[in-house]
Amino acid sequence: MRDHLLRPATAADLEAIMDVQQEGSVLALSGIFPQDEYPFPRAELTARWAREINDPAMRVLVILQDGAVAGFAAITHDQLLHFGTAPRTWGTGLATTAHDEIIGLLDPAAHLWVLAGNQRARRFYEKVGWKPTGRSVPDDFPPHPELMEYQRSG
Image 1: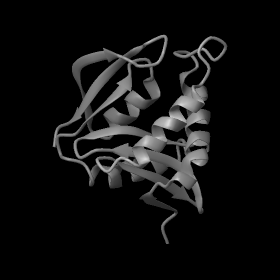
Image 2 (image 1 turned 45 degrees about the horizontal axis):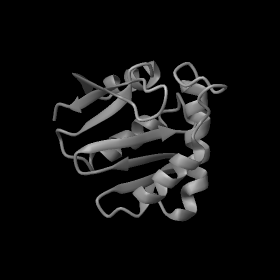
Image 3 (image 1 turned 135 degrees about the vertical axis):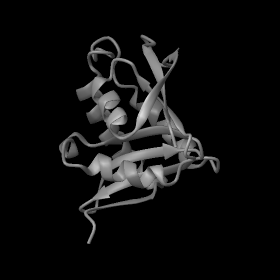
C-alpha cells in the first residue's frame, strides 16, 4: 500500500492546505518575508486557493500521507503553479515521489516560478530536472522579491 496519494482538492481541504502552506512558508521564507513586517497572508491565499479549486482550467491536488493532507499542488497543462509538502515530511522523499506523479500530468515543456531566495526549493527543482530560463519577475506580495522561471527540458 502506498504511503501517499494524490487526489483532487475540495473546499473541505482549504484549511489543511493553508496549514501546510503557512507552516512551510514561515519556516522556509521568513528571510524573504520577515513575519513581523510581512506576515503570512492567510486570508488572501485562502481566497486564491478557493478560486483555483473552482477553476476548471486548473487542477488542484492534495498529497495525502497516512490519511492526512501532507502537501498540495496546483497545475495547468503547462505550469506547476504551487507545490509544497509539510515540513514534517521534508527529507523523507515524499516531495520527490509526489513531484514525479505530478510531472506525468504536465506538458513535457512545463514551467514554474520560484522565489530566487528560496534556495531549498531551487535545489529541489534542479535535482528533479528543472532548469532556470533566465527570466525573472517580481512576486505579487510585498516586498516583491524576485521570482525566477524554471522549465522542464522534456
